[in-house]
Length: 325
Image 1 (tube, rainbow, N blue to C red):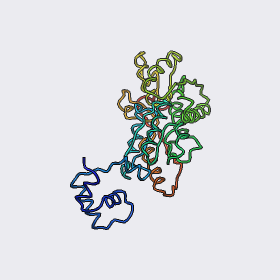
Image 2: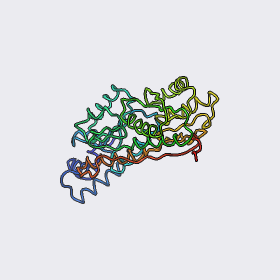
Image 3: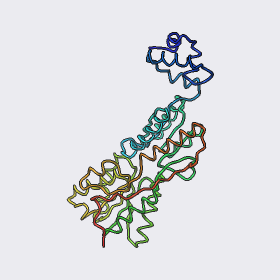
Image 4: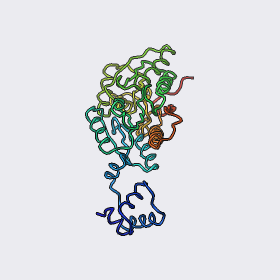
């Protein structure tokens, strides 16, 4: 393995000169800089990032905390983050928390040990432990977050309820995500506003989490509890797809017997037959814009927009009935 000493020897300069050139700290003449660069290429030398981060008290690494990587929404967020930070010369450390507080703590400790330059997080509780790092909250955002990017969940809840209300709703069931997650309650408030304005009765069905593993069980329990349900506003696409599968297993026709609207517009919503109507939120843009804010914070630049809310839209597919005239 080549070292900084090998680079210095081949370039004919001191180790200190190579160090200054690599870390962009202190004066290095143009001639010496070119020699160092040529030696690095010839030796195929890669600096020891851990040693560099210890020297500079920061690294070219950025941490990302996600609640559950098996939910297709979050890999899209991660892709947006990674694309932006790679543009800015950073690399990503991913922490898949899986709604587990102890794992979350372990990842935050690992971020600190690796001197990450900053952290992005879609895990609500993490902000209390990240006060000493540049930090941006993604998706699951409460009003007290100084830097954040999220979509308009209230608008999304309203759009979902409007779509159902306009299409022979019958008995309506609203699936409510975990009340410990702020955007679950915001979506619910938007849906309830529309349903009550249209004087439609509705039932609430609470789910334990947004996670993949619990969705099939929740779908079964929903139909056991509400056998005459005609319209379902799902808490996310995973639960919506599970509901559709359970409806079909029970011999029901979608959307004639049961219509369903999801939330997220994950890639699988188009592959299901019938395809899933859903509230499309811009997962990639949430990650990309959040990473942009973080990189600007790390660089010490002024942040024009500290809290960004992105619009959502209804993607109408086959799981909704035709609109009433």
